[in-house]
Image (cartoon, rainbow, N blue to C red; front, side):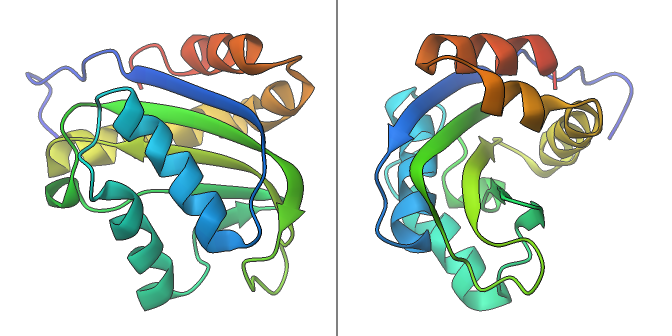
Length: 153
């Protein structure tokens, strides 16, 4: 990423108490928040599901947390970051980090911003973002915690 291309503030999406029968529904729900917010195109949720179908559950980064995404050209219209807390955890098939109760989704319009956004999310997660999201008392507080953690990704 070049220093001359600042990452714009992300569009924030949040959903709480989401019911999902399996990981596919959970991934679609998380990515659909970005579509509804205007950050991703209609095909983005299915592209995010294909990422896991094609590559396995590597998106399950730590205990209970999945990072939902697809390539920028698969529907990223703007920088978007979303948090989805599930009503009941789902299994992704990850050997160590299942079941998942919290999904972070992101999209970007180009590869350079994709890497920068991913880096910002990694910093936020290492700074305790997942714990703050799990402790949030509803959708508005989820959104606020996410916005504070990744003001410019």
